[in-house]
Amino acid sequence: MIRLLHVLGHVLVVALILAGTGWAATAVWLQLSGPVRLIALALLGLTALAALGLWFGDHRGLGLALVGLAAVTVGGWYQTITPRQDRDWEIDVARGVTARIAGERVTLSDIRDFDWTSETEATPRWITREYDLSKLDRLDMITSVWSRPDIAHLLVSFGFSDGQQVVFSVEIRREKGEKFNEIGGFFRQFEQVLIAATEEDIVKLRTNYRKEQVRLYPVDLTPAQIRGMFLSYLALAQELEQEPRFYNTLTSNCTTAVWRLARSLKPDLPIDRRLVLSGRLPDYLTDLGVIAAAPAAERDAAALITPLGQRFDGTKPFSDLIRGR
Image 1 (cartoon, helix red, strand yellow):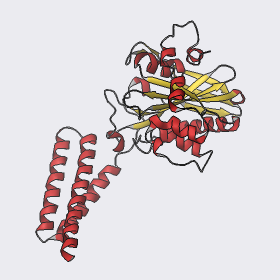
Image 2 (image 1 turned 30 degrees about the vertical axis):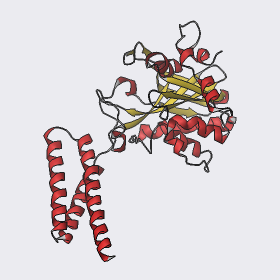
Image 3 (image 1 turned 45 degrees about the horizontal axis):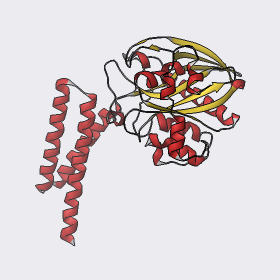
Image 4 (image 1 turned 135 degrees about the vertical axis):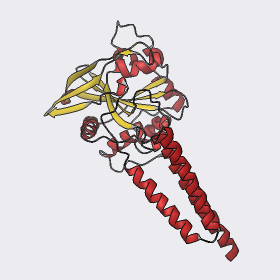
């Protein structure tokens, strides 16, 4: 029994050293570049080998001390990585929406209204619009699947009785030339931005140029709940304007942001794995009773708007077209 515990102790220490080194090496690889990256990776490797050598050479106290020193050093460096507003951003995420509220009147500035001509090319246009909260009367959830059906990007569209629509989308804020990867989203590689856009921009980009599987689900909420969700997005816009934050693949993404906003209205809203498997979010909302109950296949087929969006020729408003109006 004592021998087994001895072996398990060795296994645990080796696992901790290897896991810590792997985590630190990934952070270094993503955050640093050039010779500095190579030097840092070499130091991490040498530190891990030295710690293991000390541990198995009966200098366990020194080995653990070295591991502790390395952990403090890496942790201290990692805390210096802070989000910023002033990087050289890609044009489509160059501006986050800003919100000003005066009674029932809301002014949104830097709404994206690009005229896309391909997946990557567009004529930029940022607009300012005013909205009357008393006319806010509907909320639609839009999901966009580009590869794996379990993973989708989530957009939330608010409609007003005067015909206006505005879409909110929590996105990574890419620097010029930067590409998104899920691993980087765990290691402070990307800032978060709240984009407000017209449907003719942000939805048509996905239906007509990226040719993703885009679905629109009307969400059955009370007027007070719709208003609360809208105001929650405005609050998020104001928070990000004042203090930038990082995007996190698991804890701070397009889906979890919506869940947190909704939870501010309904504190007992349950956590569910479908908040991570965002392509399954319609199932989650169906279970909550806010999307019309129907067999999943029928529900999703009826919600598909990609073919409708691709019929757009300018003769009918895009928002009407994708809703079959």
